[in-house]
Length: 204
Image (cartoon, rainbow, N blue to C red; front, side, top):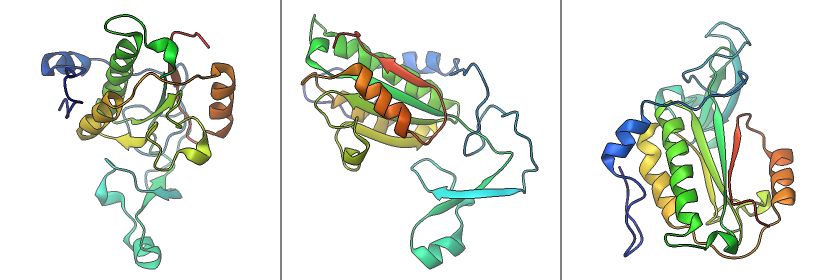
């Protein structure tokens, strides 16, 4: 569950700590329309058979919801969405600038543990989790996200925790970041509703 770690670096969490995290949940101040069934309901109501839209398949999604007709036409996996089925996307933004490389262990290590804990709680609650590194990793700019070492695309389900921890363990403190600009761009371009959580020392 903890996943592989860079050589010489201890895992972010042990199994006992992860079991404690499973008792928690990520709460939003207001219900938001999501994309799949999770552990919360939106005020928006509809019958579970009421079709709403399609979206691309993401790791951790339920294979039973794949539209095989769409796959036959497009050779890509798409999921059917229904009005009543709601989940939450938790957006984790981690400051990986040089200011986080202070102390022993450094501030980034604590930031990664905080992000990992929040991400694990969300995954265990059937919410979707995405992580963006703000720094020199290139994850903050949407056009650079595909294949970027600083971007962890939306994943869903507790079985994705190892991939999340492996991604976080590979981040390093380097480069500079303009937090105000990065947050503004991210919020303006994000298409998935849900809470945005910044883990940072707030030093530009």
